[in-house]
Image 1 (tube, one colour):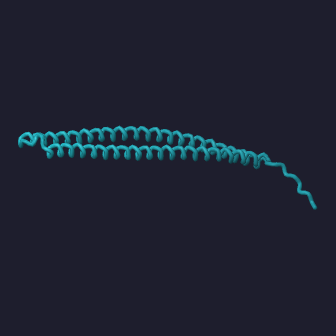
Image 2 (tube, helix red, strand yellow; image 1 turned 45 degrees about the vertical axis):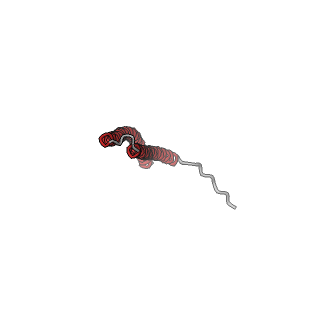
Image 3 (cartoon, helix red, strand yellow; image 1 turned 45 degrees about the horizontal axis):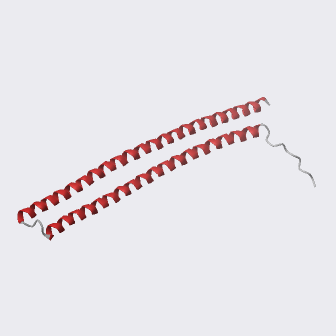
Length: 165
């Protein structure tokens, strides 16, 4: 009887220790996932800022090029005596129209990049939440297993005699 009791105590203790360690490691895993989510958010913010800076630089470059082209056209018009002509006015309008088109395209690309970054951040967040939920489920499963083992070790449900017909 003493050997059986010792085996039960050793088994229950080992199981309890394993469950405890499993819970502790799951907590560490959750904390790491939460840190990863925070770092992902920081990365998204930095990448968004970088894209914004690059977009502003490109917009300025487009405006600068349009102004240079318009100035050059005005210079040629002044040198050739065509300052009031329709060709000069049409050329200036064309440059303005092209600038508007380029800026519109750049705005669409910036919006698409923002949408892509937001989707990536949302994916990362969802995966982190899934990992945390999985960790918690594993933890509760370990606790349930420990409870089941203890319940079984103390005899479980009382056995009722089966009536004989």
